[in-house]
Image (cartoon, rainbow, N blue to C red; front, side):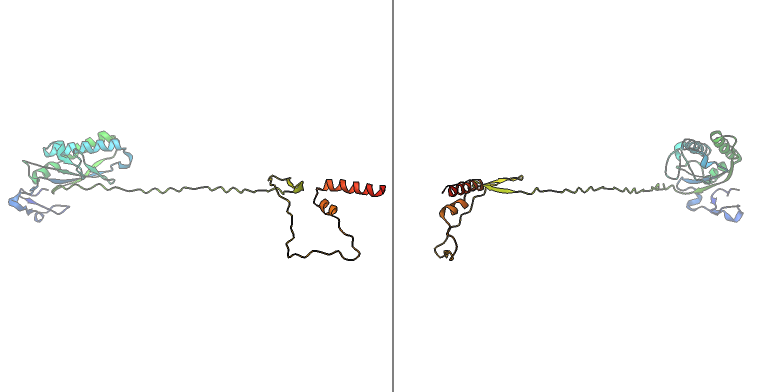
Length: 251
């Protein structure tokens, strides 16, 4: 049932005579020239269609709506403003806007879109794309005068977290130092290790204040030769000792 010219209803469901009210603005029920169109596709195989076939269905339905409204295909847009297309939800509901309608009232658009011929056209167009074996049927169709305002596409931001593992290798270093043995030969040091160093033989000079030792009774005096021999290298001291012992036996 369609309201008479100059009147429109904003209620859904079965239309009663009291539901139609006069349109504002001198009876113009399409003041902005735009109308929202909603179509129910029953048993629509939404999950079985790939992106390409879904786009084909959307473009084909937009063409059918434009033809019924007497406008060009670009005048039919989806809810986001894409021309020559409609929006199909997962439950099979088709949403679209027809823009800049001229020469037709809202009542005339409703009469065309509610007709049995338009329903048949929608079914045949959709089945030609998704396959004739589908049990598709056309449910309710509604026309609502409404100025078009495009919806903003929703975007989903995905945050990726990566974990970096750093392996640390600790190297232990052990330093071994060889023991050094130094023997004094002829006033020079001979190092048996890895480090060589010259060492001078220290000589002690008695200071004037130092006390001189006096031989105790019964002790033998130490000769100068013995003192000097003590300062000689041990091989030479050994030779001198042997020579002195041999001389004493000759005497």
